[in-house]
Image (tube, rainbow, N blue to C red; front, top):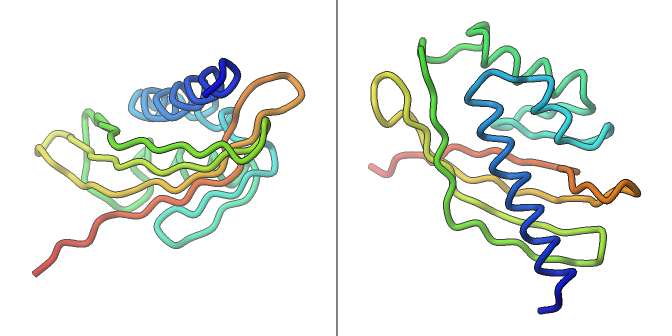
Length: 137
C-alpha cells in the first residue's frame, strides 16, 4: 500500500467519523456538506437526492419531526470499517453502526457507501445506504 492510498483511507475514515460526530450534535448543515452536491442517500429504504433533500432527512431526525423515540442525547459507535479504493478519486466501503441514546441501546445497522475525491482534494460521500439490523426471532 503506497502513501497516497494510506492517506486516502485515513481521509475517508475521518469522513465517516465526522458524519456521526456532527449528526450526534445536530449540526445538520455541516453534516450535509460531507456529501457531494448531487449525492444520493438511501435512508432505511427511502431515497434522497442532493443537499436539500438529504438535509431535510437529517433535520427531521434532529428536530424530532421524523417518527422515532424522543431523545436528549445520541451517540453513534462505528466499527468494522472496510474501504476499497477503486481509483485515485473513487472508493467504496461498509461499516457497522450502533446507537446509544437516553434509553440505552437504540439500534444498530450497516452503512454501505461510495466516496468521491473532488478536484479540491476532499473526500465526500457520493452515495450512502443506511440499513437497520432486524432482530432475529
